[in-house]
Image (spheres, rainbow, N blue to C red):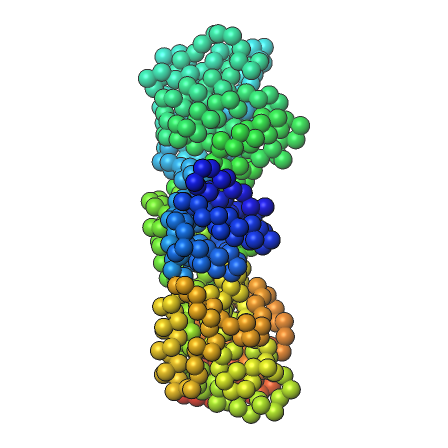
Length: 554
């Protein structure tokens, strides 16, 4: 449902995940009211449908219409179509950044938290941190957790004493019956009233340590039956301390504390025990920069099931560095934490890694050679073409236009695939900037073709749209060359400048997929810098020394 407010001579509109196609008439109605100013905020969306884009493109020159988005992808897309858009990052993205050099770790927990705390301590390079633990323990309880830590982990651990300076390399426990605070870097013990039914209180410690250490502090709220510690999270968040919450699902019936904490939305990470171990291992710099990237790629596959380990290492290195520059990430550890444990940042990284470089009628000589071998296909009842790694659709639409010029389109279906659903939606929109259209005209001239692009594009203000008769012959599907299997038998497969980003092992897997997907006598067109692997030289015949055009002969 479209959200909007009409106030005096202004109209404020929010377009988010609740926006539906049937909201378009309402939006158009608002634009027809001629307000003095319109502000349209596009929130938490990575892609927009064609009808919405065309509406915004039509009314922006006619109205005092400002567009704001919190996604760089949407901003770039609209700018490419001549639609002016301001980029304003969501505050939640900015607040996801933490100080990876924090050197004080404060862990608060109650029932069923001890084993989790031991796991966390085992992951920390204790020499780099002051570690303080607040557990709910009664005054009659035997003090044994210090012994447990010392015997299992061999750490220097003790119960905090008043006026004792906190030092790195040590673990401090809050003694029973006293609140533990910090003053001028030293322990302060108070015997005041219980807070949230506890003494020591997690809330008291969180607030005191947060006020003193601020961004140097990382707090962990563990399992527990009460809500102790929860009321301090907003203060900690505002003080830029890192806040980590244990996933309630691992706490059993002692999930009250983390559940209440999650409800505040004032935290940076929600992690289970193994994720906590990974998190603090990364913070403790237990990996070199090179090994951290290898670890990162392995964890991405485990968490999100995208295997980037088979991508070219240099390409990935460039993409990671570009991502860090775009989002002002100054430490590789922060990059890893953000992408692994924040789904928004993973989506942003996923879009960054996707190869989206394409143009209409790219490498005209290759397309000319392909069209020449397709002349005999006029006698075929139907033709199936697969454009793999199609990106923003230009390759597939170019093929469709050439096929129509050769009177082959009506008997042809083009299956256009990519593993990136966002870029596929842009491809389905079939909207492109004027500069891209001009480049298309230049490439058509190099084809020495009588093709007139004016017959295939509809002109809009600032951009063009591929004509419907071309669009209806191209079908877009999500397909991952790395993991998905053959889905049809094709006369032609076009995959240009995709394989160069894969390792030899993955290339071999993809060539086998293409071989299995081609009819006998079918054609495979590769990019200029790509080569058929030696394992497949007997199965394919090189049709053109000028182009990487191969025919399946075995």
